[in-house]
Length: 403
Image (cartoon, rainbow, N blue to C red):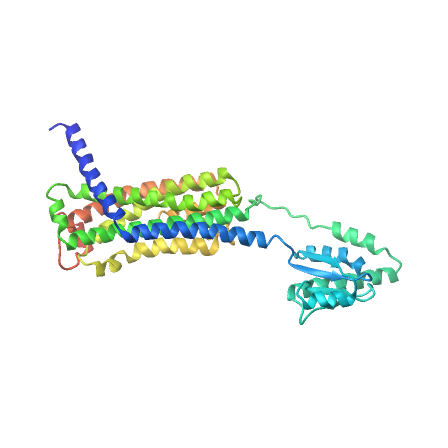
């Protein structure tokens, strides 16, 4: 038999095993329900974010002013803006009308008095943020009164104070992170983590199921162990990739239609990197889970053998989702995202958020690609030596020995 015939036969065997895995998974109700549920959750999540962003575009509070305090409207708004609050002012017909609007919930507070000092009417108590605004404004008013007493010009002093700025000299220019990009990166991390975890565990469960039911013995009569291993990873990986694309599309399309995406090119770039990191990350973790799954013969024992790689997969996701949205430039996460065990979940999140140096992406990819051949050799050896050994758990040391 020629080398070409051998290669064709190997590809055909791998393809048959992959096709069997795909058809089996597609018939699984759990797989279909999970995919549909995740797509629905993505759509709902986009709509909620859009609703919240629309609600948050208005003022934080509405302040009423009378005819006597109308002159305070502009300076109190400027004071609020200076401390990060967005308030709107509205003149009322009279103080009594303003009190009624406060009672009805149409106003958050009402400025009363003769306009020379700060007097505020509220329904019960003043919001702490508004308290800070009015305290700052009262202090500014007191300073203005003192400047007038000393013969100065409060407007001129306020202009000079407002123009005074500290000169900041950064050693490295900061990256202008966009809120929409941060959300996009976080969503990318959640998506790749869920799909990777579900499908990588399915590898281990499938190996144990075939071993427990003795189906593997029938399959090994026609295909080789490495063909079974590659076919299983190829089939479940291809289906997992399709699953991720469907779920991702359920988020990207509504986000694009509602204007939530920072740009179409940014979303397209994130999707491409998601595919790259999923393929490499899934291959690495699937090899580990397949090899470790071959060590046991019962579904109840899977958790014991895959606990360490599962913790690494979960750990990278938890670190990323808890730190990056609020601190996308975190140095600790930057270092972790280059390490092969964490890069499949952390690096896509960082790329989606933006500001990742090209050299970090290249190094992370190179390390992960270099990591895979070692995992391939180790997993194939364990799988070949342990897949037909049923009963008690096969020790890791014994599985490494030649069969």
